[in-house]
Image (cartoon, rainbow, N blue to C red):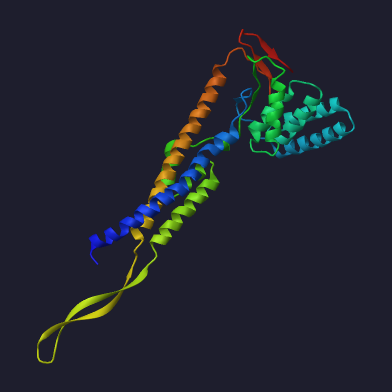
Amino acid sequence: MSYLSYLNNLRPKVTRIVPGALLLVTPILLQAQSGRTTANTLPSRCSVSAAPASVSPQARREAQQLSGRAQAASIQGDNGAAIDLYQRAARLDPSDASIAYSLGRALEAAHDIRAMAEYCRVLALAPTAPEAADVRQRIGELALTLPPDTSIVTVPAAAQHDRMPAPGTALVSGLLIPGLGQFVTHNPIAGLLVMATAAGTAYWGLQSQSVTTQVTRTAIDPLGHAYQYQSPETTSQRPHLAVGVGTAAAISLIAAFQAFAHAQSGREHDARAESALSGRSGFASLSAPSLVVGARAVGLGLAFR
């Protein structure tokens, strides 16, 4: 079989498999690209500040003890004591989303607008928490009590490990190992799917098959006359090599550029948030975790401690 005929036989296979593989991978990559943005987007009334500092194990334990005492006080109907204990726990461990949620519920029960700040902190610290949908609804309900031209609440941003890497790092990672770009841009599920798809198509392309063909041979009879005859010949071939390896390479390339675009979009989003925060005027500064700030369009500032 000649090389040209081999390529001609591969052509219809390429036209069938490559579009199918791209249709399979593209929704996964699009979902991975939007996953982080959807999970970490705060409501319009919540803005972002610096991430909370690291908490020592002792402070974390003390915060949990205070939280337990606050829960007991809440059960006994002493909401004022519960709020005080939850606030002390939140100051000890501002990175605990469950404490922020409990404090928000206690403040909301006391009709205190500071509950909004704690709910925003819950979404900033744990955007995919089971309570996220309930928290967003409560923020929307609390926002109805404020003028529409009021921006509310500065909250701690997500932890440092959630920040996007440089786009070039994501691109090179994806080119070196299929799916690695998704891992470094915090999309491990998409990374596993890309890695499995690329490895599967490459493995399929490397599979060999035994092919038997009739080969014309020439021999000499006893009288010295040359004659030709047909004999079977079995060879090992990889008929899907070009398609499999090419598809795996295409998937890896698409995933790498998707990781590049996702990292670039995430970095731009973080830069805009930091720029908006640093350039915002008329905002009062209070220490986390309880921070509610209103900046009216006419320049009035409202701070609730």
